[in-house]
Image 1 (cartoon, one colour):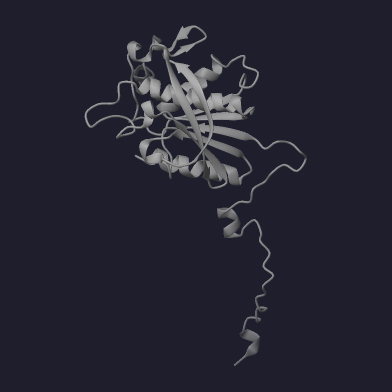
Image 2 (image 1 turned 90 degrees about the vertical axis):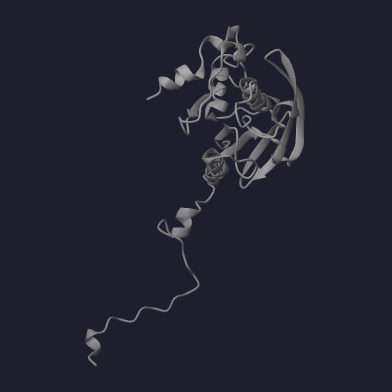
Length: 240
């Protein structure tokens, strides 16, 4: 056999394997990059109606179970706020406060639960969330859904104030969290903690939306202006 036609032998593999940017494992699991100069990590408060492993009816739960953890691995301080439904029991009670909205006072409990490198807070109000289903019965949505999810949004924002933390951004997911940008621009516009905080609103599926009559939205007030001036069905038709 002519050895000149044979490829040179490769050196034996060693255990000193140095990871590079092209290492598949590094691409799948990026390292947390936290500032080393004392600068706080950027922070985001995500608000949604369901998330794995706490609750699920569709794809939104998959996204909100994975996205907070992915951002946390990139160095973000991530808090996810979801309702504490009947099937979402768990977490540790870390705060309790009264929240008046829609002319009714809600007894809010905040339960802290781990979510990988992120954290989740479960907003507890049995009168609103301890029900057989998340959004309605077999034949109709719950008539108080406007108030139920307005309370979720307000409770998540009020908890940030109570723990003395100003988020970099608030990320609202689907119509259930749609009041977050509204409250930030009105009710909390001049608040020393939340005033000027940026927000983003993500619509995951236009097929799933809710619409409310002015009666259903009555009492959801921002700086003296009622949110009952238009329904979400009108807004949904304007999105292209």
